[in-house]
Image (cartoon, rainbow, N blue to C red; front, side, top):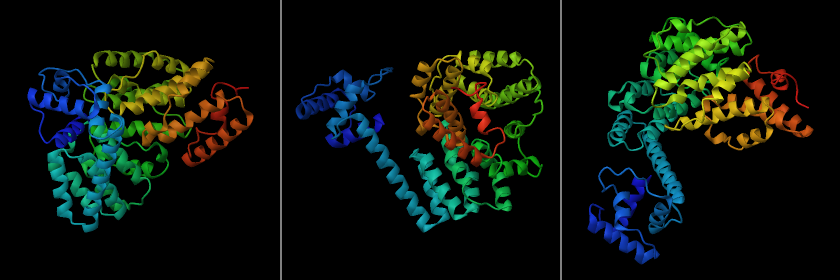
Length: 428
């Protein structure tokens, strides 16, 4: 967003900032219009003219620059720029859909990819429209097109793609033949279906597709088979039944994504919990992996959090909380941190640290919850606020909302007793 601000500034003054003279010219202009002073050196750093400088501009500096181009603050500039970009992208996509020219859509997406011009946003917008129109043939072409280089997208961009499309798939009907077409498209399977784990539909759409993938009619890679095995086990757990052993220690994990390793570890832990067995060896393994990883260490904790909440295993919650704060290194970690807060919240309530629980509760922000986990987050949010509320009528309303949510999810595990006795017995 700072780069966009710099472009607007250069457009206003009619020249590019490329040297000392340009910086001085801008400094004088700002002083003349705003009676604010930004030094040559400050502007030089903002515009990247100082080699090797990694100092980020202060917010006070950005605010002055934003005011120079007509905004009260950098935050307002950012909000306006985000809105303008989204509006421009949507208008462009609407035009493509209105003309419905396959070649134009492919060409425009290729151009957006080449320029790195909001490609992810354009791609998700066009795919959602195509799904609503039932144009599976063109969707299949888009995912197979090598010019889009989907394998070069960042993990955060891929999750944006998966959530944008996965959330629409749960709302529309696709016949079996079309599903087979999509699932035989390796990139669609990997980047959408296997990335957007639709926890709200394991008994519905998503569960039906799991059957299609598991019956052997569609070829999938070994890591995808492990993923499906873990998801199938989770479905069994949510149905309140016993799960099978995954033999976690025998799985070759060196080439697996850390979130998949976490998923496999969590299912194995759940198996041991159901059989009243120790799972310490798994935690030792996960701890080892975390300490060896320089970045994205929190990925190894994600599904462990799920299992700790589902099994009401407060020892596991304690272990997760003891790892420290979740570091946000990529955009998707914002949702990870929200999940971590939920674990900390329930553990604080378990230990009767209610003042701390209220502090943690204030950090929860539904706008940051990932779509595929949204209703899971809601379940445990309801449990939390029910048990820290002292008002009888408020508790009654929370319980009603919780029961409605459970009815929509259709998982045997989630029922009224799950909430009432989450901490052993109903709170007074």
